[in-house]
Length: 245
Image 1 (tube, helix red, strand yellow):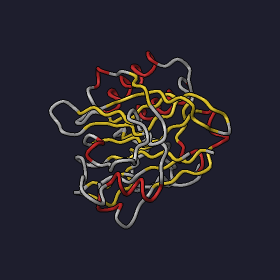
Image 2 (tube, rainbow, N blue to C red):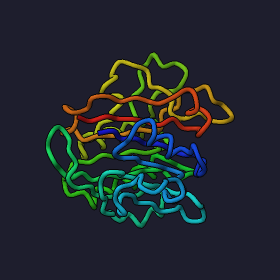
Image 3 (spheres, helix red, strand yellow):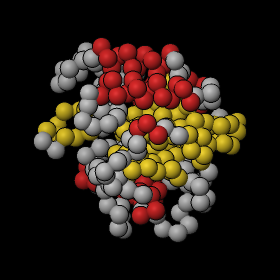
Image 4 (cartoon, rainbow, N blue to C red):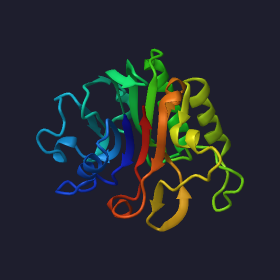
């Protein structure tokens, strides 16, 4: 089961070879958390999504793009988060096979509203999710606009985590049972770049992530950041990938 999180950067391409087509052709994902996406109908050819209720999308007020969740092989029921107007979208997927067990999962695609401040915004998003969460295992992906994992002291090119970032990561772990999938499998490695600022593309900003439930950790097979080649030109973000058995 392959899960992606990807900020398309102002909607990205919509013609042949667009972001969505590339993801599906190369990786055949099961769940895609997208940010800054146009209506997914603009990207897909007929037959690429097997169910008419296989995606959720809502634009940010005043913009043509917003957040989306696409599940090519499953139907998804919306979980309303109206207070965030397209920055955050949520749903429930039934009959997902993880570790050989059919189960339901609640999923949320998060894009911390810009401009910030981001830490209070992410805290409010987590407050809203907490009100709607019924204990079902969670999978959350998105662009949090803050560092989404703990930095090692050896990462001298960027500052260490702020107090607010550490509190958010602790809350994700203790209240929701969520862990950053990439760091769970790469605990002793420096954080790879998920965002390249156009004006300063070198620093390894790591603001995109997929968080998986602790109950899914035994089935977490792989986690990676796709970079290089066309991924460096399609968007200023790199796709984050997590694979569950």
